[in-house]
Amino acid sequence: MKDWHIDTFGEIYPIIYAHRTVEAAESEALFAAEALGLSSKDSTLDVGCGGGRHMAHLQKRVGAIVGLDYSAALLCEARELMPRCDVVRADMRAIPFVETFDAITNFFTSFGYFGDTENSVVVQQLATALRSRGRFFVDYFHPAYARYALQAESTRTVSGLNLQEQRWIDEEARRLNKTTKVYRENRLQGEYHESVRLYEPEEMEQLFAAHGMIIQQFYGDYDGSPLSPAKPRMIAVGIKG
Ligand SMILES: C[S@@+](CC[C@H](N)C(=O)[O-])C[C@H]1O[C@@H](n2cnc3c(N)ncnc32)[C@H](O)[C@@H]1O
Image (cartoon, rainbow, N blue to C red; front, side, top):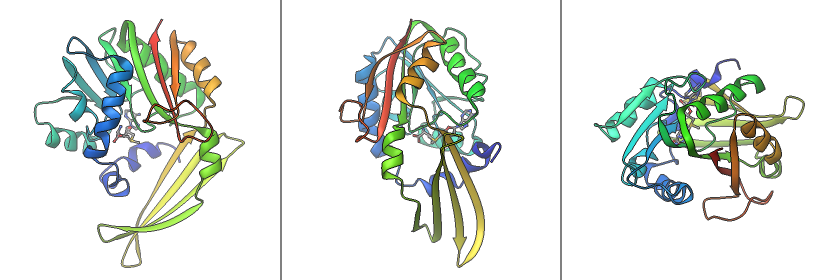
């Protein structure tokens, strides 16, 4: 599964996750803007911006917004959605900004893709890109909820393609894994992988604190409910201390 994030976030990604729409992102972006206290004075970096569906809403709230992603295909979508938007193709392990932004957002589990050392490098890079007292919003999944709600297998049809999805937790590696097989008329077209580290809330706090990133608040979902194993998300909001 090495470098799975390069293959999976190509042209197939908007098909597999077609239900994650620009419209669905509006309330999520507004929630982030409120949680971060964003205003027209703020500059924001959306790390793992994908097709820019959150940027499209955030840009109305902030002075400047830049999207960063490694996927050329998804960055093209962002440009189609917002022809004048600023997007940068870069790896989140080597973010090309130093003390530039008032806030960083990271939506829909765009973190935890690597081993522990490299995930730590990502946090260090987020910290470097933020100005002093800059704020961050990281929307991750709650590991306890993922264990409880895991659907091991599912099948669905999207845009004439049959998707067969398998999900499993590797407790030894502490990762949530997913394989999606894509068929057209019973012929296998491709196989895509995802593998994300299971971070417990305390581990997440420690990982961020190690880079001077203080998590001040966790939410369990976009309705503002508190962190709980019964809620799907682990949304961390904090400040570069
Ligand atoms: C789960 S998607 C979320 C996309 C977007 N935030 C959304 O909600 O639609 C994760 C995103 O992270 C990007 N990504 C994966 N690995 C990356 C890396 N090493 N550096 C930068 N972006 C990366 C993918 O290309 C993809 O756009």
